[in-house]
Length: 227
Image (cartoon, rainbow, N blue to C red; front, top):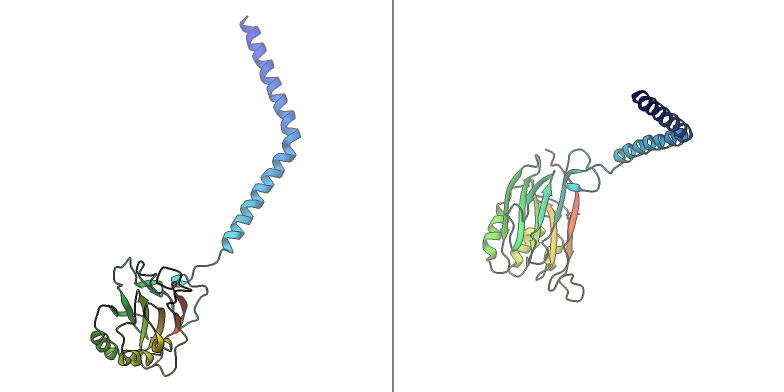
């Protein structure tokens, strides 16, 4: 009986192996094909990964040339989300860093080294313009100045403050109004108007938020100050 059992088992195993062999012969082509596909797919994935857009500093859309600082900035969103200023992959000001506030937010950067010198915000709704004017007057030649509004950056601005900001290269500052959104990058001692400026008027017909225009964003490459 034992022999019979073993013999049956051997036959069963043999039949199984034979069946498997026949099936594998029939499906071999398919197996090869799907394996081939698998390799082709993984090769494609690798190729796709290598063509994935490279990440540039501050998440800007293209690399900056040599001797330039990459920057990206956004104004505040209504009175809810603060402005954000990034330079050379360093967040200089943001709500997360807890160094932004209502009014005009300013970051000062060394024009030669890109090193952060100072960050401040000046409340242009409930505050006083005098400290802002003193601050603007104290900026040293060769300093990169990045500014962004949050909530309202204009109500307390006077002609002197506007003139000092215009001297940094701003064009829009002369007609910056209540709750306008504005971002600007200029420099102390700049002899021309800065190309880096975005301004959206507060207009109830076009405002994105109840009472405020949409966020303005800007990115670019600031030339390093040469001696």
